[in-house]
Length: 324
Image 1 (spheres, rainbow, N blue to C red):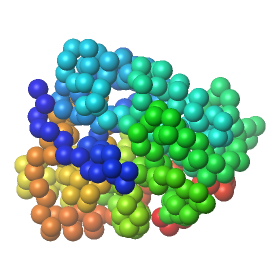
Image 2: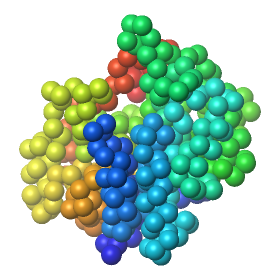
Image 3: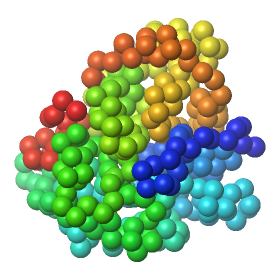
Image 4: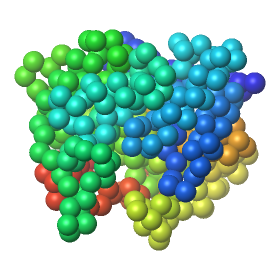
């Protein structure tokens, strides 16, 4: 039984996006069947915004879960807001539509609600999602992202996707798209790592000024996946300040971290394959933080990034060398 309805936010193209989403990223050791099961549970709990990506290598399982919940009458296709992502090996304009079509086939869907460029660094096209060179660095490609964006616009015009956006772009990269000659559609969103230790206040302010929605991933901190995250990283949900605010509201630190984003006007993704936590996370919709709480949480910012995408820092499009 859905706990409550999820509010939506209107994007700059007139389409709406649910403010709380279910993230489907799973670490390498997680069985793909777990992802399918968790997606079904998330839909049963009330999540209608599902965030996936080709590079997560579980689109088929997520698609099966969505199809099962449509088949049993829990939802219709229109109830689901699905975000897919264009991976870095497919930035060349001629590869964009085939990549989207492969995602649609994996999911057994006719269209996506949102398709975003996953990461601004381009990798060499081929069978490998993470192509490496002889120095164990990523094999990078040189692509003008404005050309990639034009190919995204064509996918929207073809009805394969309703809205298009970006992820992990910094201010300079957003401006490059916004100032592109002949721009047809502005990005509706920029999906970035965002949590109380990296609150992205400057990027959020910039996005709001351009009518671009910020979508927060790793909103609860991050899994310690050795490839991407330093195991010595702090545990966000063990922060005593978040703990004290949670106690005051009789909530969990995770609910407080999610609620913080919702009250800033940020669309927030919560990732858990645990049924109890899936329900808890969804209850972030059911309470309010005070202005004082919000200010205190703002004060936790330390510009700490869990996911640095190491191995691609030398690429001119690596986004995290800029302040924001």
